[in-house]
Length: 213
Image 1 (cartoon, helix red, strand yellow):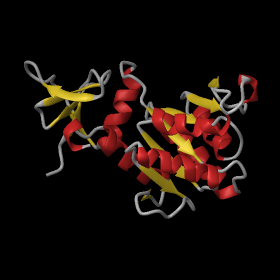
Image 2 (cartoon, rainbow, N blue to C red; image 1 turned 135 degrees about the vertical axis):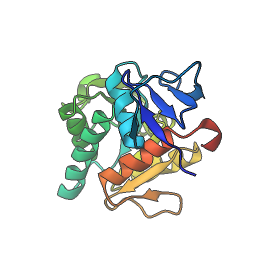
Image 3 (cartoon, one colour; image 1 turned 180 degrees about the vertical axis):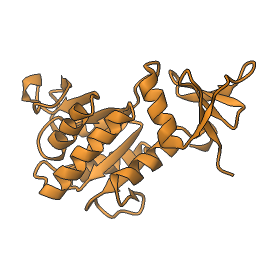
Image 4 (tube, rainbow, N blue to C red; image 1 turned 60 degrees about the vertical axis):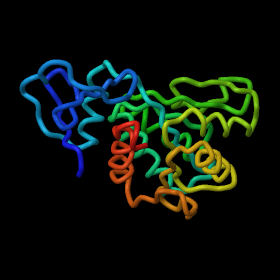
């Protein structure tokens, strides 16, 4: 049976009235005492948004990957995705360069969020103009491993060979990989029809109990 989620006036998120979400360690724990009054029912997206706006949650990183030579549709979707993830209070990690990476970083900036760019070069100034926190890895394409490993989940918007490698690493590291637009149609990719669907499924994943992940 699907869990009942509620948000209290303080921004705390409750599950089935018996557990409260520890937004710093990102895990559920038993409620001590009586849950606060004035709680309202929400879905997982609403709960995630409440955690993000509380100012007390540790910012969980979500990776967004896609081609440097992105088309108009991919760019538009990436901008919308970046904005949506920022509004949920999530940090976005990408490769910091052009195409989908630049589009998602633009969306994150428009949504008031934080976008980290893990650059292949050794100079942080090589980042696209929308990256909030550029990190110059100096390790070339091997930085794809860092992107996949450092995220709680990955979202692929389209995809070429570089994206395929990040998808493969993500799946190898047991990370959920969601696919938008014309992302590679691989057996373990969780294909989605819209940014809204990705956000719903991502919220469900991030807020599930640890023993269900």
